[in-house]
Image (cartoon, rainbow, N blue to C red; front, side, top):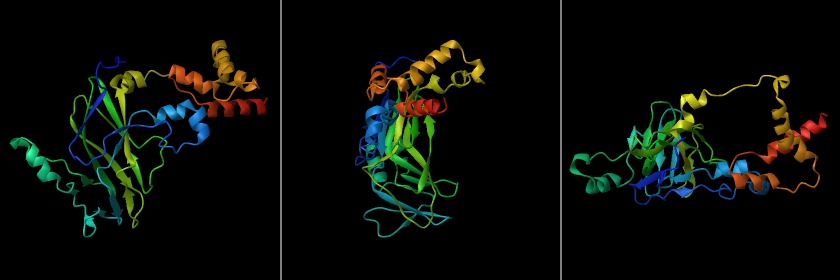
Length: 268
């Protein structure tokens, strides 16, 4: 794996000036996690905090009638058909005023209706760049319930080699009902990945232990340390695992461990 770069892992360039700046993702998922998860489950809080929240540059509404997509924003006289793309209001003129002459007319579209029915691409108003040998995973916000009415296509962008708009693709899942996207609620979560983490050599290097009889003494010892031992300790303080995990900054979920240990105990 590449070492932590000496400078930033990612750079964000704001092209739509009213767009909200990216924000470090929050361990409490903006206060929506259950208190017990926030206090005791380092796996959940670490996943929630991994990356940056990125927002839509304005509040808008989308509606899909089963064939066509329409959009609306404050100040628009009526619903606007997305045929097939739309610029952010006033952005073309602002872009052309700032860009070199050879790039005038090349402002990225704000919204694009993709060929697949009910699928929309939304630009955040940002460009992104990553450190050498790092990529950016663009996904739905981790552990943060969204407004509903759509699902997100996740993507990994080699942003150290491709300097372009930071966007996300949504698949609308209901018809005839407006879907509101707020400008102060995360539209996506952007997470840095070393390219080696998803290389074929890495993903192909896994093994299966197919049966209980194939467990080694070391495997059973580790199971006792992680599951059976703590479960049998009636004086074990709440959150002991989470404290240790935070110190090590590694994963693991006491919810799962506690549940597994109780199940094992119940079945002898």
